Each structure stands twice: as C-alpha cells, then as structure tokens.
Length: 143
Image (tube, rainbow, N blue to C red):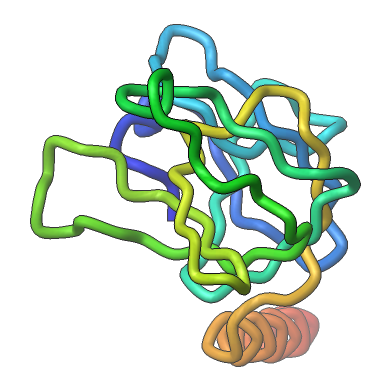
C-alpha cells in the first residue's frame, strides 16, 4: 500500500528483489520508497513485505526524539506494516523491526537503500493467479 499522502504521486507495486531507496517525494511532505531506477515513482509495499537495508537504518529526529534519544535501529531487516488505520489524518506506512520497534517510513532519512526480500503469501498467490489469467488470455486471443 502507499500512504494516503502519496495519492498524487505515480506509483507501482513492489516486486521481489526490487532495489529501493528512501525518498522525499516532490510536492509532498512524505518520504517513502522508490525504485533506484525510478526516482519519481513510489513503490508501494503490501503489509507483510520484508525488506533488507544495505546499511544501518537511520531516522530523522522528530518531536520528542529531538530531546530524548530513541533506541538505535540495530536491525537491517524489517517487515512493512500499516499503523493507526483508524486515524485518517496521519501517516500509516511503517516498518516493524525484529526487536518490536515500529518506525514510520516518513521518518526514515532519505537515500537509504533496501532490497525487497519477500512479499506476503497473499501477494504471491495473487501474482500467480494474474500470470495464469494473462496466459489464458494470450491463448484465447491466439485461437
């Protein structure tokens, strides 16, 4: 999914092995992922998608983090989640790390690289079904 604040930005769904980079999207106040080769296209992750960062994950200090330091993010692997879905006026896209820390994508520093390791099982099934449907369509149009 892509956060509500990215609705005005071109987007596409994430694929396994996508090389991503955190980016500030033009004309928004939102950060998220884009593909390295497509800097102006938001890459939307489904809840449960696993990503691995190339280096230590860094966030932008916000609010009380400016005064009180948050625990460092020591893990490089995270799972995409959506949080606070009952509040339509806040960012929802977040990463959950193995130690339980949850960080909004919009709080990540720009320029951090990550790779999509795995899509959720539901997405894999949908992708397989779409491929089978496309194959059936090609066969029927060839007849």
